[in-house]
Length: 129
Image: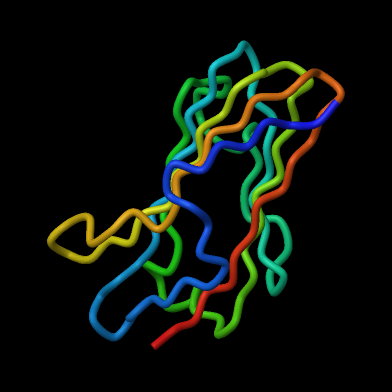
């Protein structure tokens, strides 16, 4: 069975981030189910987070920042979220561009619904300026 993917704000595939102006990315996964299973990876650094890495797992909301620290900066980095529907049928994935004042824009927001045998991946490339 296929995952139903519903873009609220479509994936732009390329996300420019002005780190010199203090911009960074804020990620949110909202999960409606007993045990969310996901991984967040970089093509440069490998797996950065898995659901079980978050204190309090399982939760209904997972949040993290990227490009806030100098060690995060990688030009043309491909970031990929992998979702498993084994024990969770619904996810909402939101990526926001932030600066010191708060949210600059919603980069993408996508909802997913799947069956226990389904998996789904979502990725984009970061362009640093």
